[in-house]
Length: 191
Image (tube, rainbow, N blue to C red; front, side):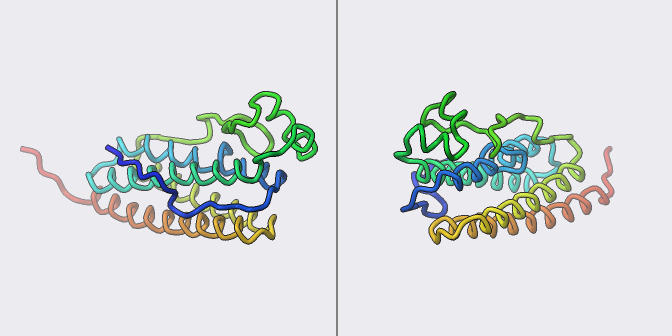
């Protein structure tokens, strides 16, 4: 179903270590409004969409969100690469280091592990699409908060790209919602 291209949607080449920013970025990895929750939400909701094009768009956006997970993980790894245990502890990542060493693990900025309670798949296309639009707005707002937390040009450019994609996804879900309303309004005759 998928073809994996071994490159990120936007290049992640961060030159400066910033452990505190890495900790904040965890919000977009394993947090309730993060990329992992979005990917799983859309890839689960697609099955109950009423038409092929509605299923396809949720598959497309869900797949793109997986790429965003990869981008966020790359950012966190690059921002923490080479940090000592004492540096991690000082940045508030001591608990993470204790449990995971230098590995990434889906948790939010406070260290709360990712949970599937962060996303919904109700089975009603209208409800699910409203959920998706709200999720994209929450992710956009989170990226805006993250942009304000750094003056690193490399980090800001990636975050601005990701924020822009949230806006596009919101618009696409709005278009899809209109299609679902039209589909629901069509008269169907079953003989």
